[in-house]
Image (cartoon, rainbow, N blue to C red; front, side):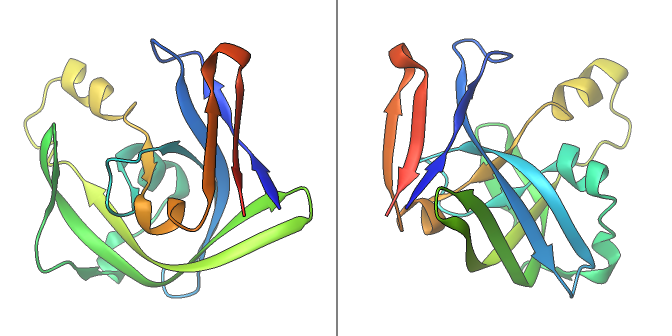
Length: 148
């Protein structure tokens, strides 16, 4: 089974992405998300831009015991316990359950430039999902896919 990804030219150099549908009855969502493939991320996390686009009400979610941190600092973190991620493959849809993390930056008092910078940070597809696939990444040939 092969899941096609792509390189987003809006990033310099172009960054590896894959599209998936996030589904959760608990959070009331079924929405397509473009995930940055991040082998450095231990878990999959929805970030500010996608949370806003989806209209996800984090008030319905349980707060995580600790915040997720990265290069940009830490973010308020929530959990979607019944999430599923669905990828379109050459054999139909492949669906996988996961504990989905939702991260929100505190934008209180942030200037417009900072807010714009935060709202372009993509959601991350982490190793708990990537580890189920072989990742083939050929930037020079503009080919990217997950296979199992």
